[in-house]
Structures are given as structure tokens and as C-alpha cells.
Length: 261
View (cartoon, rainbow, N blue to C red):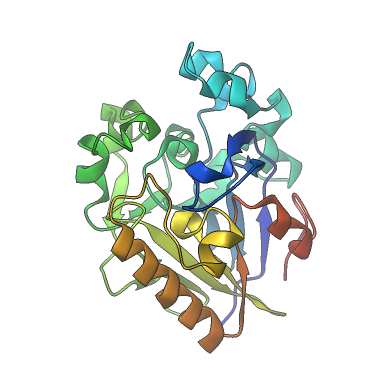
């Protein structure tokens, strides 16, 4: 069994939001990061999600206009994903593989920056993103994943059984439906630990602790089943679970742009 070399969580905008919008039973206001992660492997540089449209880092109103999100998002220009990659010594052209956890705008906003990469998406995800239900439609900007440019990229659908990205056991994509039909999680084996990135299978630790869904999820029963499946994998693989949207989890891994091995 091989390992990837190292992993980083990139700095990113944050959103100030009521926890009840992220987990049934949530209380109080939380500030959630809206990040992407980078994994260095001998076979390529892998990007997990692409964050929000880079214009949000200049002014959220450039994307959201007068919607409430413009007031909820906290950001600054240096948090652009291409700038964050540069702080690690990489450029967007160095990214060889992009894994999109799902098509919501805080994950798919930077896709157009990586035209030469190979892309991976969950089953049924494109179809859902083009025609979501009413309770989650506000989370999509179809031009980010359904423009002529982005549709021309090298897209590959992950099977429901999952995918070992390089065939060596180091980076494993899991299909964990519920938040959306094609929601993905990612298990990465590193030299010193295994890390499981939840994507939006969980937004907060409470989703895991309570085995509870997000009110905007596509299917609540699938969400709860995917949380159970994800945590069973984490236990079997002795993996440290990282909920990217939960600010509390970042300290365990050293914070933004800390090298995780």
C-alpha cells in the first residue's frame, strides 16, 4: 500500500451563518471556512474542491449581488485559490487532478482555473446541479460547472463503489450520497497518518456526533447512512476525520497551509 506525500488545507473565505442551516438541531452562529485542499502524490498534484468563485475574494457582491450571502461572507484578495497555491510554490497549471466533492458554489467556483487537469465527479451530480430542488437551488451557480468551457474539460464519473485514484491505495474517492446525489468524500493515506476529508457529508462536527442531516440536503436518509458509512471507514482505516467547514477541526491539522504528513 502506497501513500501520498503530504496534504494542505488552503486558506479561504469564511461564511457567518446560523448553525440551524447546517444541521438539524443546530444553535447559534458559526463561522465556517469555505476551503479547498491540495494533496501531493508522486503521480500528480491533486486538488480537492476549488472553493468559491475568485471574485468573491474581492467583493462577495460580484457573485451574490444583493443576496444575504454578500453580508455573510468574510474574505480578502489573498484568499483566492490561485494565490493560495502560489504560497505553497505551485501554480494552477501544476494541478493534474481535480476531485469535485459536489457542485455547490462554495466547492465548484474555481473550476475554470484548471483547464488542463483531469476532473472527477460523483454519479448523478451534473444532472442534479442542473435541476436541483427548491430548498437547495440557491446553492448552485450553473455557469461555474456547466459552461461550455468547463463542460469541455476531461470529466470522469466516479462509480458508486468509489475509486482508487492512482491504483496504489493512497487516494481513495468515496461516493457518499445525501447532501447531493453525487457527494464524495476522500480518504488519503499519508506517511504518518490517514486523513478522511468529509466534504459536505458533514458541515459541522454535530452532523457526525448526532448522525444528523443538513436541512438543505437532497435526501436526509441517505445523508445519515453516508455519515455512518464514512465513520465506519474512518474507524477501519484508523483515519483522522477532517470536516473542512468546521473551524474547530483545523487546529488538529495545524491550521491553514500547514503541511500534513
